[in-house]
Length: 281
Image (cartoon, rainbow, N blue to C red):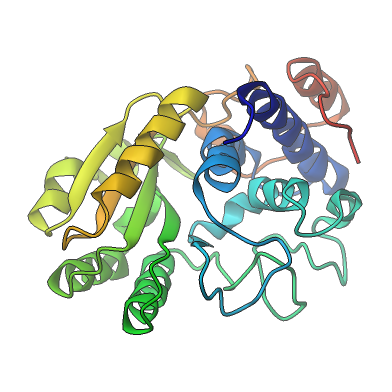
């Protein structure tokens, strides 16, 4: 179990990494990345059994698949600060010939990345395949995935959700980042998602809510509860209520920061709100 203060320090540092990455190339997606910081810090440092030395097939370790690949700044930061690759490589984000592309890719062999993602709606199918493979191979480890709420407007998600329940893929925990925002506005305005809890329940999933998705303790407790629900014949869905841009006051709650970078003055403001704790790159 990780030291709680270390986890809180890591959350602050990851937020610094996010805004610095997108600022450096004036490109990227800070809003959703900031909102999912507590989740990914908790997942990689408190919940998953994973190996930073990285074996692509992931045998005998927990696996994570990022479906909403546009929030690559946060996964790159968490992977680097978990030992998958040097923290200094964050300097190459979105640059030519970098392993850290705007959406994660596999052709450059970046440790920690098992699928190319960013084509929304596909990640759950991949995660189900990995989870089913583990069951077939007698591998008792779990598969985790993360999806944006706007991503659930993709039909493939619901085909996959139906398949997972029908085939009792009960070693899968899919988390939905419920920040209520997508690139063109709120999810309610673009295409209302309705009651996602009732929908996943009707599709045969076990559903739990984490109402404070930017509270580290609440996220850890929710993930631990989800792990306890596995192995009971149903896939598990976490509805994680987060805030777009959390931790940077002028970005918080606004879809406007889905995919734009801060300028110099805004970067300084964002960094001042998140103290350097573990060393910038």
